[in-house]
Length: 201
Ligand SMILES: Nc1nc2c(c(=O)[nH]1)N[C@H]1C(S)=C(S)[C@@H](COP(=O)(O)O)O[C@H]1N2
Ligand SMILES: [Mo]
Image 1 (cartoon, rainbow, N blue to C red):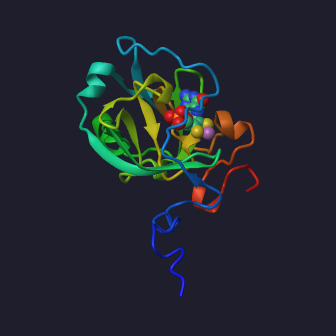
Image 2 (cartoon, rainbow, N blue to C red):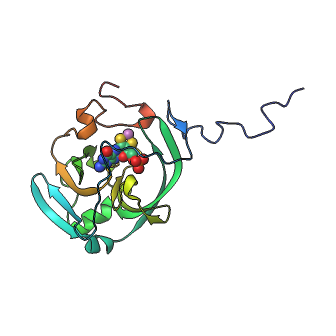
Image 3 (cartoon, protein in one colour):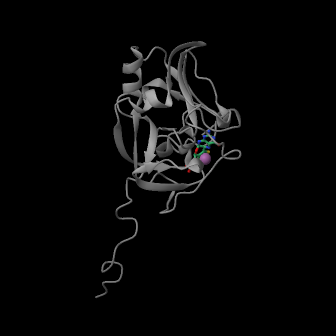
């Protein structure tokens, strides 16, 4: 009687149900950016919340840093097919951001904006209820510039292109408005478990 395949760790056992279709697991943290890494100086950084074209709240780096902090440990999934388990982030949840601004989620869609001109759209419901944050730290340290520091959006249940690096604002919109990659053929929603990679998936 053979025990081959049952003595060691069975590959795939702890990834079952956790690894979306078409993805492979990596221990690395690849860097994927459409352009060069911008140098963001926190002295000049501000974060703006807009309802349509209208700014409704704005924070400096110091003010933003005084907002309540949340920790999230989540699996992340890049459309280029790598997934990384148990990534640990700390930042300000979108719930706390709205609370600090004194508003409830005002419109059904949101566009995240970044200092490099990048943008990405997410339904507002996918940002609230503890599902997303503006992350300021990764693995216990300030986020490295290549990974979006000083601040990046984290929406871990959608493909990682939705997690805008170098974020400097959220804009609520009435209609779902394609962002940088969505205009270039990526899916408007981007659920990794439904393999929503491209616009017609
Ligand atoms: N501002 C900005 N955010 C961005 C990008 C970008 O080019 N600019 N690339 C996106 C893509 S396609 C991915 S997969 C992730 C990669 O994040 P990482 O480099 O930390 O792995 O960031 C996303 N956020
Ligand atoms: Mo990506």
